Length: 57
Image (cartoon, rainbow, N blue to C red):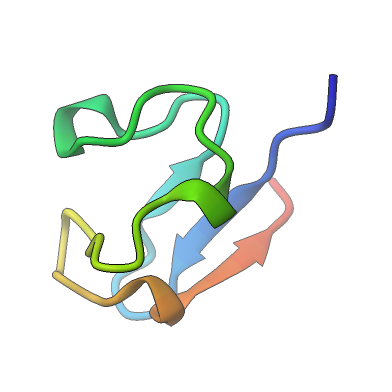
């Protein structure tokens, strides 16, 4: 199993954790960041996927 990563919205700081996904926002748990749809936006502020950066927590 590969290690899951976390991604942070650079606009508002919302965290996307690959292991948890964002099921309430259409992304099932375990979804790697590269498989999150390109038109997906931050649930907190509406930022685009390109406004996220990988972070270590």
